[in-house]
Length: 522
Image (tube, rainbow, N blue to C red; front, top):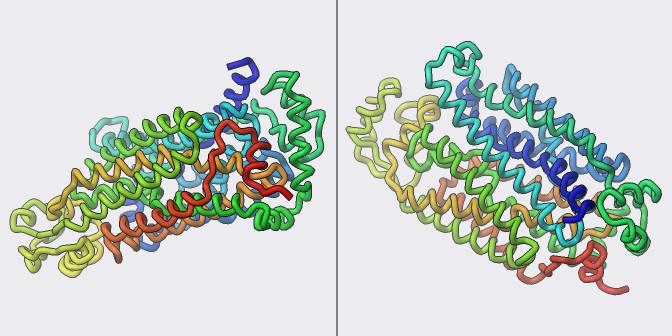
């Protein structure tokens, strides 16, 4: 790397740290699900609301992101986002009720726009030959944050069982879920402080007609002799697509015929990425793994494996995105995802659930477990039927509070196949559509509409993500685990067919060259 490329790498690294904060914010809730359900007496719908609140927050924030990006600039937008993460983390940890928790997480969801804005900023400062790797750094930080969240949850859970005096002194055993949520405070604060180091995006400065400042910004990330021709390219691209900063005018361009191919690629990948069900698996990881009947403690530990798999395969994708290209990673990755989801579907569809006399003697934590005698020896072919029978036998509250234990003692399934399918799915996602979607978003849109286009299509993927998160508990309760995984596989298959038709290769192209390929000549 040259001196300027190292500087660009530093700025990209700092901005990509927002992905780490996002990862912790998104996944830390997974360890609190059972705790908050019991403390606040939550229904499936209320639990879905608490977990998916950030998804709703980002839906509210994204329509305003274009104005922030174009009106205030990329750097100020990032600083606002970092502040929102920090406030949300403190409020979540101190939340006295469900509605305070929902409101705090909703506020944090406003900051989830960090992923789109980070991809935009990094794509604008990265040298073409490094752009794929630099933009993918955000995804690496996301999965490192996810892994950290799972590990933090596991360590806190283990600490509560240690009996150590310091655990009691810090009230970790009494306020377990609050300590989990509060673990986000420090990384959010560090990111906020470091953002003051990065310069403003030269692309935004050109967009704002602040050419001299754009030159100074470019001097920090590229050799001086390249600045004049690069500025000319940016200004030429801006002239060709127009410089109307009105959001509606930019949306009109996005929906216009010249950008038809770009629109199809963007909306397909935006929907397909989240229709995989990735956030249902990540945000409810222990809950998902408890369906395998391995118990709560084991589920938390297996969640750590999910995090580690995410990190390893995201790094692999990062190393190969500029070598293999965007198209192969997307297409083969989606095929891999489909195969993994079908493995999970098969594993759950062949599962059987039986309450035995031995199981009843081992269910000592359930008050009056003898109430289950009415269903002893009955074989249930679906988790839905089993859970309904248990609920009828011991009541809704006990069935909910002891769901993990009941599955552990009564489920008979191909647990190794299912868990391997989940890990394979996680690997495929983070190797392909997870990071590469943001690479595509950072390079396929013209400079004149980028400030609105990236937030708009992030809004689409965020809305899809919110739907997945909100309805996942209900899907498990009404469709069952097997049909839920089959549903995800079908939606990804539709996306794969469309992407095979329209997705083109963009590796090693400048942003201006990408526009020439994707938009027809006038």
